[in-house]
Amino acid sequence: MGLLTEGINEIIATTRQNAAPIGIINRGGSLKIVLFKGSHTVENVLSDGIFVANFVYDPVIFVMTAFEDLDKQYFVEEIFEDITIFRLEAAEAWILFKAELLQETKESFIFELIPLKEEVVQLNLHPVNRGFNSIIEATVHATRYVAHQDPNLFKLINHNFSIIKKCGGKRELEAIKLLINCINRIVRKK
Ligand SMILES: Cc1cc2nc3c(=O)[nH]c(=O)nc-3n(C[C@H](O)[C@H](O)[C@H](O)COP(=O)(O)O)c2cc1C
Image (cartoon, rainbow, N blue to C red; front, side, top):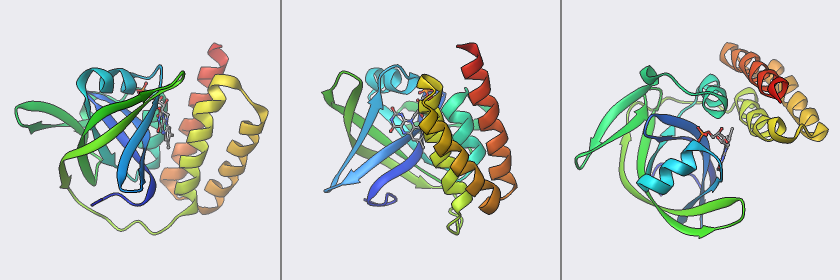
């Protein structure tokens, strides 16, 4: 499966000039995504049938794309067979996927993915870092926490924060600050 590892690959999906972290499931020789209803990503994938998977290793961009809209300057235009697509400037590599609807459930749409084009822009070495991994964990929990304010999720987020503070670098610490601001802003609005 080329650039993807077995299991779930956390990439940032770009659809038009929208970006959001999404997990690509690579198991048993097939590639799938499960998109929960209500996001811009699911609306765009349903209408366009394509998206770009961006391989990004910047923790701040993961938090930003999970909670906010990115400015246009974060996107780079690419052309595929007369179609204009957008990938992230920060992507070290990207894959354009066709997404075919397999199934609709009460909460989600499940798509099978077919790679159309891939490009390695600039691959860097990323030593395993628990701080970065914990930002991903905390951001996943936070996207659920803002919806229901489940105290167990709050505990998990705080547990991840302690790992990020111990193991992360400057960018992870910046990502924590942004994540706290996003959580507070959304929860306060409710
Ligand atoms: C690491 C990570 C992985 C995620 N994976 C998925 C996923 O596979 N499917 C999904 O529907 N949402 C997933 N999310 C949540 C979306 O990114 C989130 O709902 C986002 O706000 C959607 O943004 P949009 O409305 O701009 O599409 C994930 C979030 C994170 C942080």
